[in-house]
Image (cartoon, rainbow, N blue to C red; front, side, top):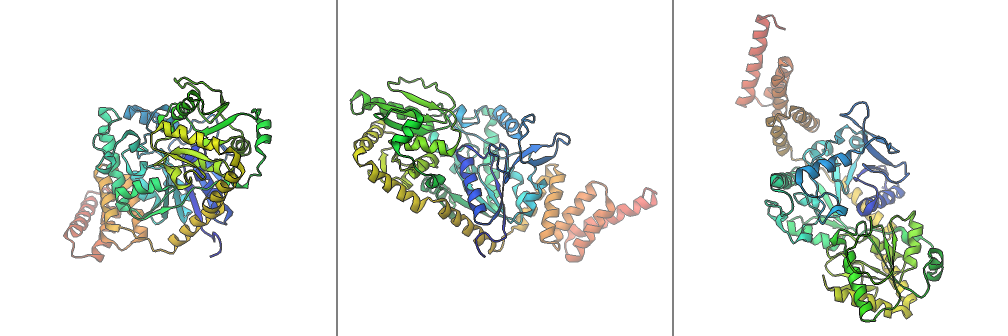
Length: 531
């Protein structure tokens, strides 16, 4: 099979921007370039790309969803409604820019089974999907499909939070029984979410992909051994570099400044480490170890730092294009990440693609791409003094900036090129399509029976009918569908399925009893003239 062949891949991501959404979008465009028929399905769409479709609720039929190329501004995205519901249930702030921990629940009112593109896909590639995928119903939506999950955090294996070690919690290893963050009334929701995700792993075949050794180690600690490591990629390698002096002229930055840059979505989120960077620069100024520092802060929601700042900050909330962002990187002497826990390294990777050395903490994704004192500086975890030392080290190496730039870019070209990482995903897709699907039919039947016992007969019916497409000679499936028809007083249809089940397994007493009961009910109806 040459390149992507004729395979159809649907990418699912709640957004096509921010760190996770942007990384997912890059994968989508990369495999599309390799000839894969790729579609990106999201809640919130920021691009004008026609291959990205936004999910909206049908304004006429409220229980339906549809895909559109352009997001209508007069229709509230379902994602916003879902987040508000979670916030009320959990008593904890949901999005990362609102607090320390991002929480999500494994439920959604989005019925992905109604999307034709899902049903026709060969591979479902799941990315960051809070509110988009109802994990409890995932086997119904994706049964018979090869499913790849690229993880950007640990939320798939927790009761709700994205990175529990950020609050020194390892409850996810034991069941998230008592979550230290959510309110008391929501404890059961968190432990139930954890349990449902573990059950899901037994029901379905997922291929787990992670983008850093840091996250791979965490997933393997849970007991998942078949984990694929594919580093993120950076398209910034393809941008023509302007000189540093030219970039500074364009952006109005003085040539004599020592320029530090970072990109974060939030200044409030301590995990992103803005205050760590500012403290480190303050230390250098106090010791007179840096002159003319100039801090470029990109992407932050707003500046309310609650910390003493002794140097100019150039705040850029929104950068209009990647090309303009490349100018900011090129104008900088060093990219600094102040994150204590960071499972992905998108922006530092992009900076390195522009030849900018990176400084950050150990035990993060940075250790995959930064070679200590060669292409950057890896400071001791949570040691602000050492972070300051790293910034100083890079400034002291400015006389070798061109050599460092070449070395930094060569690492990204070798390990993180868009073409290289894309081919790994295409190869993964192709290898999955050659494998026979392992479908745990008995477990899935029991899973459907649980929905029936809970009174969710419509879901149980869909599950059993879906399974029947795979095994139409399974007597227990046929019997279960007969029971549902019986419960709905459709006795002729019930008898039809009971007879099929009895013919396949005439020795099952339960099936035989159901068949005789249906025959009796039909006879009584005839006598009563009710047919």
